Image (tube, rainbow, N blue to C red; front, side, top):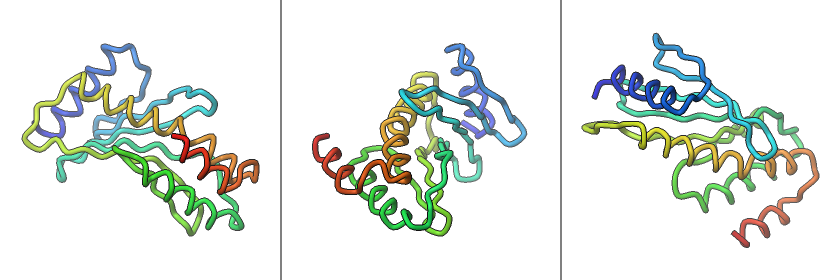
Length: 153
């Protein structure tokens, strides 16, 4: 499938689920929101035709203060170690955190089940960690408390 075909299949899958989203067909990008258990998640899905990949990106919409950035880097590392699919990107310079799930569509025929599974994985993972990362950034949860919670599963 071409990138444009993948994008159209993704739009069709989202419409079939009555999902609300913005289409940016010229850039092969979809922007949407999801209300998690605690914090709303704004995300985008982009099709990269050249690399033949789909990227789901969900930035955290809060700032990590300079004094919490090293602690957050360690928390992100702990979280990433246990993930099976996707990862959190973290920019130590400005404290930006985002969840990223990338998958290739090279020599694949992708459809509704594929897209919905990808979104479910990404949204579940983002929702699981966004409030914990926010609490660490605000000093309401220590790194040690976060690590203990991760050990519990």
